[in-house]
Length: 226
Image 1 (spheres, helix red, strand yellow):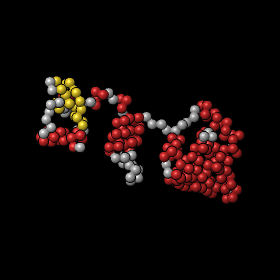
Image 2 (spheres, rainbow, N blue to C red; image 1 turned 90 degrees about the horizontal axis):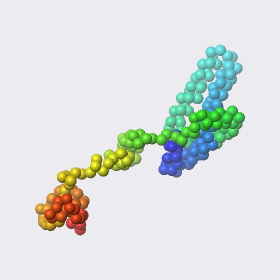
Image 3 (cartoon, rainbow, N blue to C red; image 1 turned 135 degrees about the horizontal axis):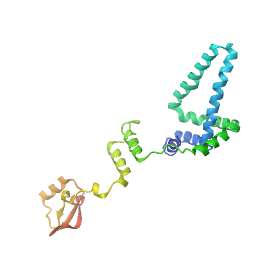
Image 4 (spheres, helix red, strand yellow; image 1 turned 120 degrees about the vertical axis):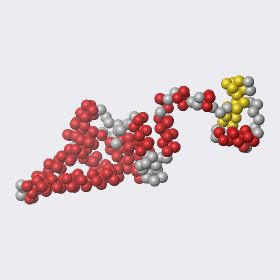
């Protein structure tokens, strides 16, 4: 996926950046060109192997069984199992070889790739909607290596940021009747200090003595203890 490769190329480890850059360089020549080349090579291999075994084993069912076993085990199961874990470095190491194949098969592969570009458009990788991003962030709370997982606060903050455009001030504000305020003539005695600290706020709105809705300033709680 091109998006994944771009993420690795910018924020991965040094070796991963190198591998991702090599694969991206190959894909920039044409993702459909790469795809058609690989599929064409796979078809040629799968069709050639039975012919070779037919001559070697004398034809018949031994050639069919032998080619099927070899293709399934060494052409599908083993490569895919290895590439699930080491796909990025293998892709980078094989990029020069794939590039050679692209030019060798270009008389067939290149026109087909251009036709696919015109019919399907160029694929730029997986792009998530906001709901998908929130799910992805939530999954990082439980998945991933130890030390790289997101904690609950980080997940909450990121999810809230993604929802900002859909929220109004009224939906997240604190109603006035629930706001802890103080009058401008309040005496900061010991009981009042205990009350302020028990509220747990860093800033407290200060209103005029004769009007609780006429706010004249803001008390910074940290100024009381410095």
